[in-house]
Image (cartoon, rainbow, N blue to C red):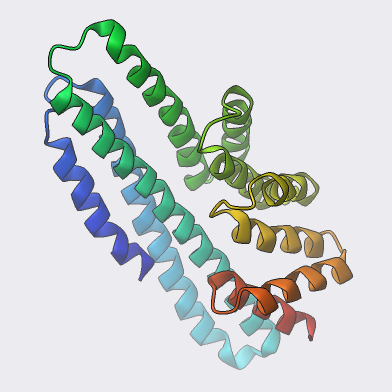
Length: 243
């Protein structure tokens, strides 16, 4: 379902590409990134459909197989949500660039320089996220670390930190991922990445064998954030742990 919601966004992005992009290399590069991410969406959607089929086949294999299938599907859904966020980043950038292209008029090159710097910053972030979505987790972690160090005041900092944490998590480097998610909780409590980071922190604790702390974190999510995808995932984790 999440993959289907991305198609209108991609159509919108294509429409903006048609606005004044004849000699605009920057728009062409962003268009290429959108195309790459679209491919990733369909690959992930196919993986989810295959996981659903396997879950049906495994129903007779017992509770363990079913719980593993549910966790796998929950992780895939979370990745789909993050992929959708990445596409939204690119779509927003397309809107901004197309608007600048239409309104630039007779601006001198010196006036346009700040926009170029902003574009380079955004490109660096999107490039690292694209590496993550392609499964190049070590490369993504390095790119995001460089972005975080070079742009400490960027509004994309919480997103960069979250993807960095996910890159470590997917390499099973839970001891590296945990402090990244904790940094988001401490420094970016108003960010949209707060609740996903709270969940991933608890999962890091669990994967490191710190069961009591993980259970406490999952219960905080189910008690305080009912109805959210994170609360559903936390409840599944608690069910698997027998709580």
